Length: 458
Image 1 (cartoon, helix red, strand yellow):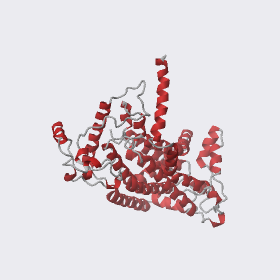
Image 2 (tube, helix red, strand yellow):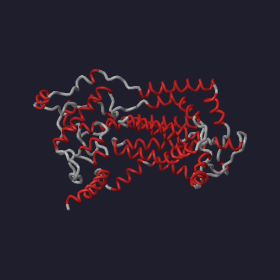
Image 3 (cartoon, one colour):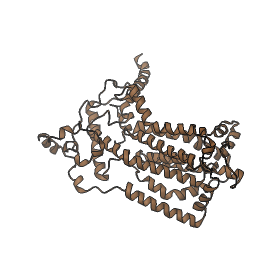
Image 4 (cartoon, one colour):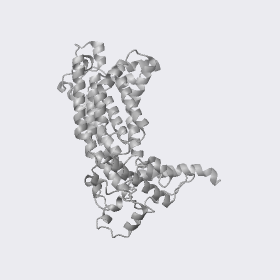
């Protein structure tokens, strides 16, 4: 009977652990409050977008019908415009890399004194009287802005032993059916990870995740003109399977990919990663929707239907353009009705479809350990760029401007939050503060071998 019940007990334990790991020493009210604050920029963006139609038409600015079309043609379809654009993008990307993303080499005095100690050295050092500041580091202020590896005490940069009970918690009893590790095994695993952290710092001089593609913004900026022209070349001919593919990316992917990315960051990566993602997305989209309101531009479908000299006004209903073909094939009107009711019809520039896809790519490229995941994120950017052009919703200019918005806000969040969050996470790991120095997945599967799977530093 007990054997039959074990799978059900395991499921109960899993949900029980998810609940308490999500709270992580907070009350439900604190959890809801933290979520609301962290995602408040996203909520503000959605509020502005949803209520944009309430703005009186007589005070709204003139709609630019052909401006984006002519600029797009010059930048991407003429020799002089193409060369000028490529040179400008290359210069901006070089400046961005040099002044923001270029990593300085680690000087010898920052690494020579932190070699991993051999066992004999450890035994000798255990007999030494610790320096006054050594015992106070882990209990000192956790403000990451002043964390430098030079300030790490010697005790934290050697193979110091992990406390036997540093992962224990009353709400996380041993799993049934899953092999549980002993306190000694847990300590050895944590100690091994800390050694890897120090070796990674010695090699890179940063606290960034392993195999972090921190350089993606300048790289994508350099390659964007060529990628956009390539996907623009792929827009013809029109095929039904391509209609379905574009619909999945443009409609479903635009909604689900950011949500999946946020969950992935929360479960697999350092505390603060999902907050950085939500802040970057939210502020970027707020800037984008404000641009739509103060500088409205017509999408390609409007010119293709009415001509570049047509008059545009705010009474023009939204139009699904190429997505109508999917509605016809499926015998529905869901997509058409959704776009018909859009409160911002002339919000083509910048493309928030492009901006959100690129921002997701930057975060996945920065945090993901597996290169196949990074490649999938880049593929989503390319497919999304192709889909917007194929469906007649955006010019290439709209897409490159959306990329600029994402680069600006990723860079701001990178400098103000991500670097500091990474440093704080490393410090907490070296201090064996499991509550604050672990991911959601690590907390759920604590004291099992699956814990390592959710550890971004293992």
